[in-house]
Image (cartoon, rainbow, N blue to C red; front, side, top):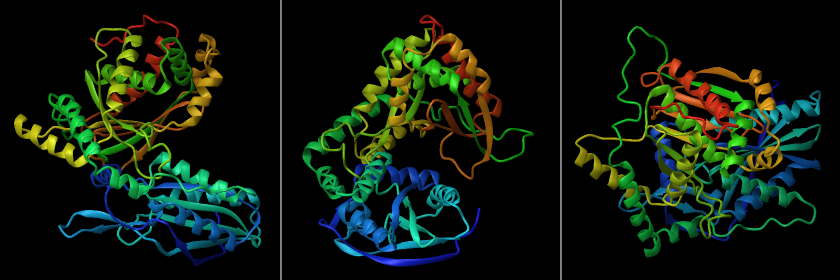
Length: 462
């Protein structure tokens, strides 16, 4: 990949309607805790193609309007009088726009590849939440015209749903005659509402569910980590499992059981974990976007929070595990909007009562979005045994190498890829062997294929 012919930066002025200091929102507290535990900032990258003939001034106007319309992009962390973290939203200010000049001899495809590469790598550069704005943006200029906008967005300003809303707003601002509207409510509105008695009571009531769910969990999901004797190498590892057959089989199960793809996949993973490790019932953390709640559908802020789900795959059919996963995840989803400070108090009290700390150290995060719905609509009713069997040869397992750090024993990302079930798994090799992980990942496909056209297929979990 080529290097830009030159790099420059212009300063862009912005002005917004809301300003002031507010407490952190519950979603911000939650993502900050995840950042602290993992050492990862979870920043998101994005890009969009600019209209032909766009200038640097046009790109600057897009950036200025975007930051001005959305309070979360004008937010920085501060410390209040008692020393607690809070956030300050600026009413006006200046933000940098990087200008990367692409060599003239590069063709349009080269520029597109560079934009895609920058979108993947730029989010790895860390934000200083006290001094940086939570958005970095660059314009790629090629042969005198601006071709692409590329950005990195801090997870402290928005979650995945909020990022999609920002992209939609940015595209609307470029459309001839289009209007980019300010999303309501905004980040300060959410911070204020979460201090009201009604939502404080909601968080308190939610803690009763969490206490019941966590009271009897083991110290760690897969037992106490232990250094494997005679095995050298990095402690933390990662792999990607990709299966079109499992995707199709999952759709067949979803059609038969009347269940959405996300909960079917959760049931398949729980069954495969029980087969590979013997851990059952399984308690895991899942992410809930919370945007189904009144007033939160269109907010650009981190709204998603962890829920905790217990799934028992013992001595039953795969269809029954799907039913259990559906019921458990629906209940958990209704208990996923809360003040993380309240949860810390519950955990501390439970740990004192148990006499030892305990935590859920397995996470499943379904990153699939609207493409999953499109795939379901296209494929449901068209999945046949022959079609599933014909795709088994395409299954792949790729060892991706080491990770620097993890605070969980296993983290499974269900990636947002069309027409395939793609699982990116990270794990602690002191808690799970590579052989267990391979059996687990391949087991997801095995369970799916066994149950695709057999409503009585057993889980094979004793």
